[in-house]
Length: 161
Image (tube, rainbow, N blue to C red; front, side):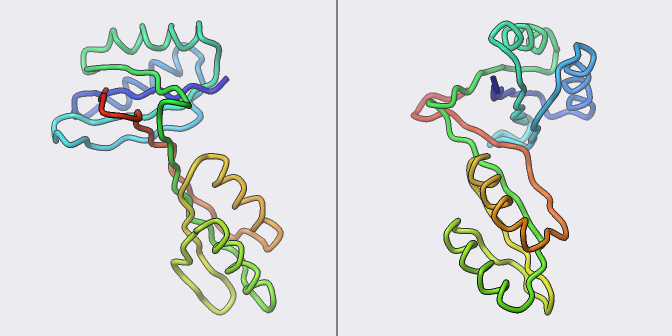
């Protein structure tokens, strides 16, 4: 089972290393990690996706709360949160395949951000499943390069972490 954890931390050098080190020292695999400043410049928000049962999640939360730089830890449950990823995909685009790629991008509401004589680069944003679906459809054209962010997530409604 995948869990999305949101962590507010002090925006100091070395915090990311300490948090990720906590995961590796305990043998937990980070599937996705995104970090950025919040509306408060001295606070950063980490969004981490991990696999494991509820006991693993509970243990991770307890260990994170022991770190001095950690301000707050929250579990973003799928139904009560929004999660998005960003992916840039450079694909071979020659002949009739070019038009098909534009059509696929249109269906997925992806943006074509660069076009050359033999390739195009698309930007797709959305849920993990949407990004995976887009990648799967353009694979047959020949992916030249792919880069993606980890998930960023936020709770629904007026409550904040």
